[in-house]
Image (cartoon, rainbow, N blue to C red; front, side, top):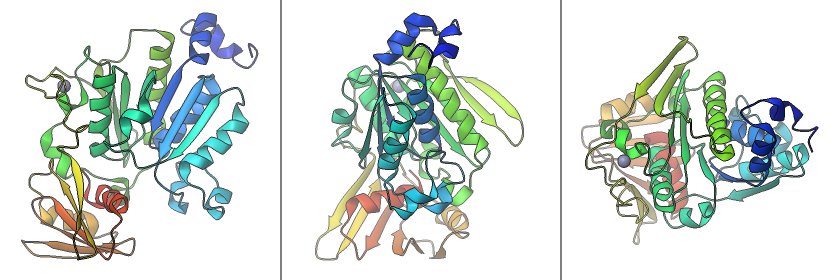
Length: 335
Ligand SMILES: [Zn+2]
């Protein structure tokens, strides 16, 4: 055991005491794409005692370009990401309790999924679930590390409940409705690799009890070669900081409703107040057939027709699967 971890025990920031702390720690990773696979493999190799990985998707060929834990056999075997990650990581380090959970994380289950965790790591691709993590982090007093990467850039910030500004403090409301997604903007692997590695370093520090964490918003562009630190201030009147966990209560955020008798699901994001259909059409054109006027936009992607309205609503026909509807909404419209 000492030999396995000898190189990080020699590192003064960890040491023997740090290694002991890691081995009795519990990390929850939500989302197992590029960021999630980097964080999961790093934490399991580092000897974190228990690592839970939650993801709702299956693996597709276009994931292999950057999602380092998966291979072609996983796709042939039609494995969900969480399961493939668990299987691979158990062979990497059998002393770590690795647990893969296939689930759509939402306000009905997140409190149960993260209970007793020492840290939550964000490997998500949508703001909707991040706001949920933010709520549960402050409510259950669990630190979390935000990370996002797309195209050639990414950003990260560490949130210590009731100590640093929270995610909602700095999230500009205008970006929520029109955030880019990997499916429409593309992504090169170095962007999520750097952000995921940065998140891992923050996690290691927190788990060994180092309080000198990153208190700024870090943004990196690997193609332009730029790096920025942005000081974030607590926002006056931030509901989450005041103990109002609206996303956890399911009052705001992404909600789905089955439309009675129509075999359709409506998805509504209360955060996307006004959606520019023109901008959305431009963004979707490379990946979908799109028609629109000023009242609605209709497109077909992943064999599913979706109709989007300027108030941020979307209707998916010929389905009653609310989880699928939320997933497609996050993927193509962004939240
Ligand atoms: Zn806040």
